[in-house]
Image (cartoon, rainbow over all chains, first blue to last red; front, top):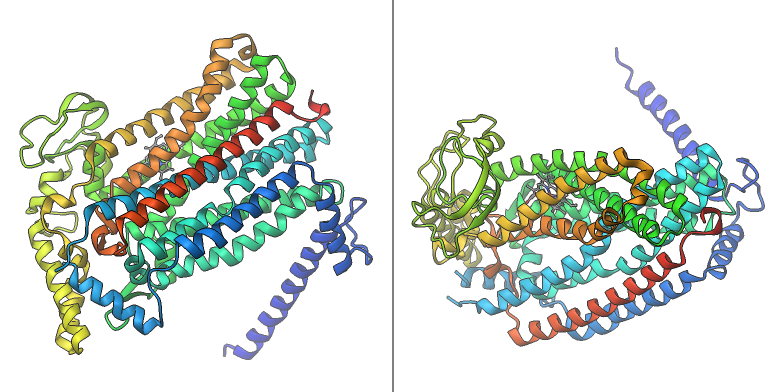
Amino acid sequence: MYDVRCTIEKFARVARGFGEAVANGVLAFFLAPEQGSRVQCETMSIRGICKFYRDGFQRMTLGRTLWCIILLKLVIIFVVLRVFFMTPYLQGTDEQKSRAVAEELTNRN
Amino acid sequence: MEPIDTSLIDWSRAQFALTAMYHWIFVPLTLGLGLIMCIMEAIYVRTGKEFWKATTRFWMKLFGINFAMGVATGIILEFEFGTNWSNYSWFVGDIFGAPLAVEGIVAFFLEATFIALMFFGWDKLGKKTHLLSTWMTVLGATFSAWWILVANSWMQYPVGMEFNPETVRSEMVSFAAVALSPVAITKFLHTVTSSWVLGAVFVVGVSAWYMLRGRHTDFAHASIRVASLFGLIAALLTAATGHQSGVDIARHQPMKLAAAEGLYEGGTHVGLVGVGLLKPGVNWAHPEEDPFLFKIEIPCGLSMLATNTPDGYVPGIKNLLEGGYVGEDGLKAPSAEQKMAFGRKAIDALRDCKRGTDGEQTEILRENFPYFGYGYLKTPEELVPPVAATFYSFRVMVILGGYFLALFAGLLLVGKRIAAWKPALLMILLSIPLAYAASEAGWIVAEVGRQPWAIQDLLPNCAAVSKLSVCSVQTTFWIFAVLFTVLLVAELCIMLRAIAAGPEKECA
Ligand code: HEM
């Protein structure tokens, strides 16, 4: 007879193995140093990641201007446009919104 | 009965079109240039030559500028849904929300992580690891496009949903049907492959400029070689996926096809118009009058496209409005008037449901729901999209598609000799705006051609739009127009300055 438990266990083993491989791969991928593919413990830390980003941002030239434009854009979009000009038309609870739309859809024909 | 001011619909549509077209300036270059720089970096990893590293870095810089300028421009579209198209937003329910949420979470994080590795990791990651992060960035961006296009495709071909009269929302019954609808797949493939074409035209155009100025000629030759081979393949794929898009609209949006072909009276053995000039002011009710001042067509081409047989029947605008022909399903097609009557029945049933649900009304609503949107139309003519805009945009896109194919093939044949031919270099440079024109024209075909629908057959614009004051929509339209112009000028300045500076010294 087909052994369901055994199959599930096998599947779980394979999945765990796959999960570990992916996790290792992602970490190695993130933090593999230039010199080789072996992951060094020192870089494989939160500090390593922070340093990577800090160095990257510090070395930016044109990137600085681009970041300024992105931030300015986000402020304009989320603070000015969203708050003053593009507020959601439907307000209230889902119940109220549904009633308002039903009213509109049944009165416009 | 509360009529909606048509100028409110027009301004709301204009605002959405402005935002979408502005947003679309950045997307295809991200997808197209992204893949080209992936290929160039792969060449660097394979050959180990610093020349290819510098070449990749140069195009990556332009990619970064374009990416940064495009970031967040799509969010404005989402605001517009909530503000200007609130009935629509509510009506689509989780169908729109689910793909966009997946897009937001998966693709955004994928992109955001790998883009940092790609830009900051040149000296910190191994070559192959860096190459992988470049590919992941571009795949992430392409994956984002998938979800947005799934949402758009659902508006063109609403499947995998059921309308709930209780909540007045569409509820997803099959995520797979929504995410993998044939329209979504074709739209994704055509959009992505056509974006590759745009990216390739951009690379050969910028390279042609260097050749015209006699600067960085080795770099320019190498870039043209990669981009024209890539562009040729992409242009062939674009033509193939474009053909499939035509087949899809013949099946699911026959009115769009009729408008794109200027086909007022249908029939069998219908030709596909290659080029033509429409007579102004033709009325669909009098198709005996030839709608063309002149046309060159491929005999039986449209019948072939729509039905796979040279003598297949293709309905024209008049036939679609009058009904009575036998459709692909073997059934007699209802007329527009009949569909409008079904639609009114569905809306009345919804009204009764809301007053106090009884099973019969729900059943009537369910039966007539496929025609729900028709109930809002006053006359059958409202079903006819702007024919000239759809017809000419379609020709612009397809003719330019043919031109790009010839351009890439020509560049591959001519090779380095192109450097000596200044007029050709100028023409290649001027092809950059043409690629944008083709891409935007594609969206005009897709979106103008499906008017008056916000959601095909279910919700016309007049029912989808929020009841705002026209003045407030006009105000935001002009605010956006100014904002987008300023941002576009800023992008162009930064991009042109980066191009003028040229690649790093390894490429000089
Ligand atoms: C070469 C022959 C081409 C054919 C036969 C073709 C066909 C089509 C068709 C039928 C549509 C409408 C699809 C719909 O409404 O669902 C479309 C849309 C579109 N096309 Fe093309 N096209 C071609 C070339 C191009 C080129 C060269 C570009 C850009 C460089 C382009 C970009 C687009 C875009 C962005 C859309 C809107 C997205 C979509 O609906 O797929 N197309 N095309």
